[in-house]
Length: 185
View 1 (tube, one colour):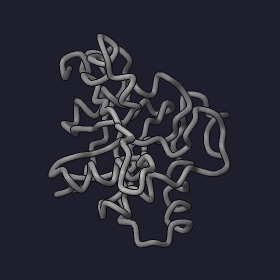
View 2: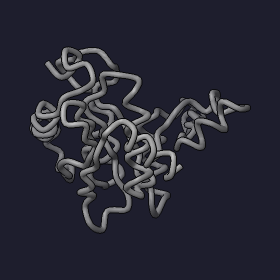
View 3: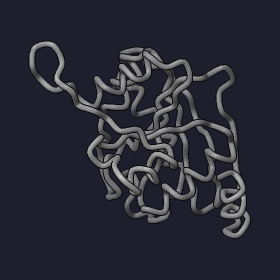
């Protein structure tokens, strides 16, 4: 995968800015801005090149047959929303918190916009996951204007969610997505 990733970056003229925080083995990685399906290709290639074992979550039901094998090869982890004590299904947030707590080395990628369309407000699940698992939030970015993939700020959730999300959004606004009109408003 690393060889294919090098080829993708070479042929497309992209570069890397690998500022992964030293000593961080577990984190919630938010990928910004998310404006195109091409984001997965470049982000996946970038993380292979940076040797960051990024995973992303998807419904367990999708992880079957050839499609499941492909998704797993790209870093997909199936989420089983099993029943928990009390009879209700666990939420994705609860499942991801548990995965991070049980692992010694796991970086889970989330798109805070929750869509490829322009948004004024980010989903807050990534923050709750990081806070609950007691791991940092690291910003991964794709800047199509500079043709640069990289790592931005790293913050440790302190419970002041609105202020910290605004800090992350301020950085995200400095990065140009493939379709800038679909970026953060």
